[in-house]
Image 1 (tube, rainbow, N blue to C red):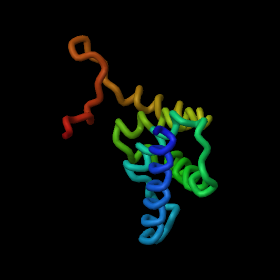
Image 2 (image 1 turned 180 degrees about the vertical axis):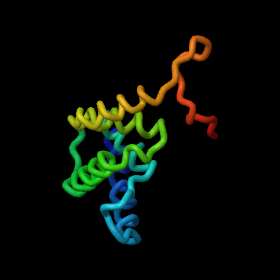
Image 3 (image 1 turned 90 degrees about the vertical axis):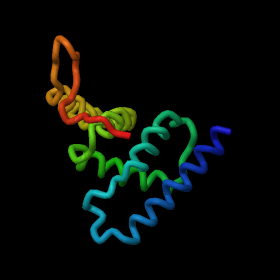
Image 4 (image 1 turned 60 degrees about the vertical axis):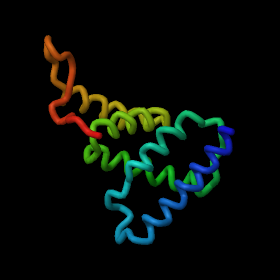
Length: 122
């Protein structure tokens, strides 16, 4: 069941990339979507399930996007990207994200650690 679910996610990952590529004027600009970040996070738990060549190419593209544009992401996405990049053996970027998250946190005796820009969402 898990392999079928991963296969479906891989196919959707490829389809989303193809759609993005149709409309993107410059692939070097920021094109990393929340869906792709979530996909990379989920997929990082299943390294033992092989990927197709196409999924590997798109994953490499998304990894480069994450390395360039992680600062443009919200706190939640930055945390997920740090985990993903660490699991992809990119400890340099993963550690930079963790360092940034730590530097931008606020410590309070009453509230503990929090981030001022972390507001309520849905």
